[in-house]
Length: 117
Image (cartoon, rainbow, N blue to C red; front, side, top):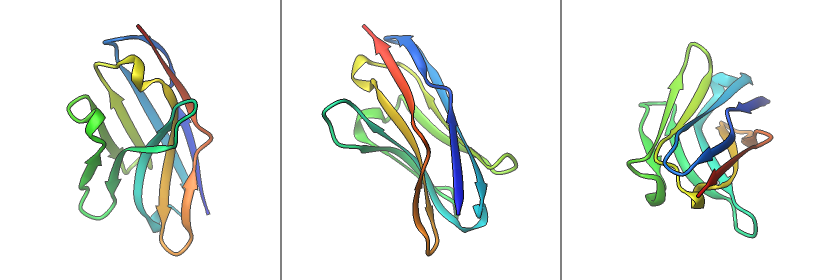
């Protein structure tokens, strides 16, 4: 099992920045991928960014490329999402996700990000 605890959401004006954190505990050595998803009201949950444990490659949604950066601190078992140049359309609940070998997907509780215009 893997437990994920997110922090760092909040209210920010358009053009501002936020950094989300996701601390993982439990069977962390079995995590293959960690990422961030978001879900806006009335919309489906979508992938924002992800990083593969082995090799550290990253993947971003087209809508956030050049503005968001995903990173990991392996010593702290934490993944971050640095969000710059935020837009009102980035408003959503952001969820941390871990893909664990054999066990499948685990999710954090979600953190609200609100960008005012």
